[in-house]
Length: 215
Image (cartoon, rainbow, N blue to C red):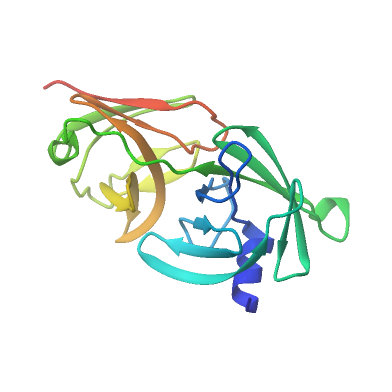
């Protein structure tokens, strides 16, 4: 494993779990006021390998030992503790040289988006309302906004001039862009005729329903 991948794991971390099975695909939950790379950190873990993606772009790969309970061993030497909160969320702890350097990172398991009636193709150019604990935001999906009038979300902090749908594997995402750069993305759990459900939100373990605003 080269120094780039070690830095990705050590500083911003990436890992996951299905019930008690760590082999799966996971997304790092972005922390407010931090900088991470990749911006949207998606990780696939097999029995002995780990792959880091930013959507379709493979950033790096390395080896992993998952044989120890609640401990991940990277490159045969780097040990990282983790614990599960529930079936779809776990927290990883990286220990620094002193207490002030310790930090925790949360991960959410990615699941195939449920779309029984193929509504995904009808979502764009519709207006939706998103209710977060500290914000209520309306937006038109797939529409570019003026840089002078961006969509502002306080928590998690997002200032976007475009919101669109993207896909990684079998999971669709609600992606936020600013000046043609992806800055945030929420995986979509299920799509219905007039709403869809997102998850993987900092500080929130439940899903959030985004409902269509009828014109």
